[in-house]
Length: 160
Image (cartoon, rainbow, N blue to C red; front, top):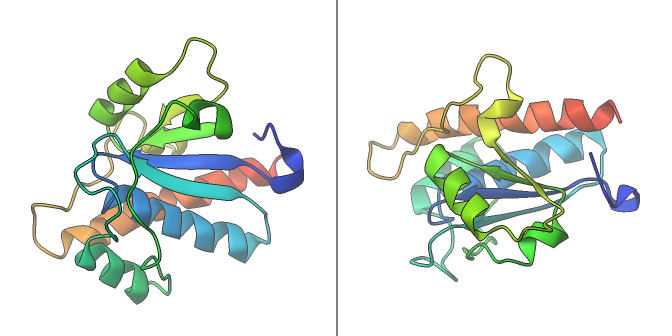
C-alpha cells in the first residue's frame, strides 16, 4: 500500500470539520497499527476551515478515551493540495468529502482517494456515522465505523 515502505503506509483521514469523524479515525488507526506493530504515518484533516487549530470535539475525545485512545493532542487542519503528494491514501468519511477532495486533487496527485468504509466488506459506499448534531451515543457508532476501517487497513497493510 505504501510509496514509502520504510515508514509504512501514509494515510490521511478526512471529514468535514476535522473535529469528530477524522480524528476518531486517526486515533483508531494509531491504536490498531500500534497493536499490530506496524509503522504508519497517520493524520487527519477536514474539507472545511471552521475548526482549524481546535482540538477534537469533547464528545469525540471522551469516546476515544473510553476506548483507551487519547486524541486530545490532535488539532484540526484543512485539507491541502500538498496532502495529495504526502499521503498514499486519503480516506473520506462520506461522499461529499470524497467529492470535495477529488475536486481539490491535482491531476498528477499520487494519493488514492477513497471512502473510508469502502475498505470494510459489506459497507462499500456507506458514510461513517456523523455524530456532531446527534446525541452522545452517536460517537460510539462512529467509533465502531472507524475501528472497522482501522482493522481493515491493518489487514491490508499486513498482506504487503
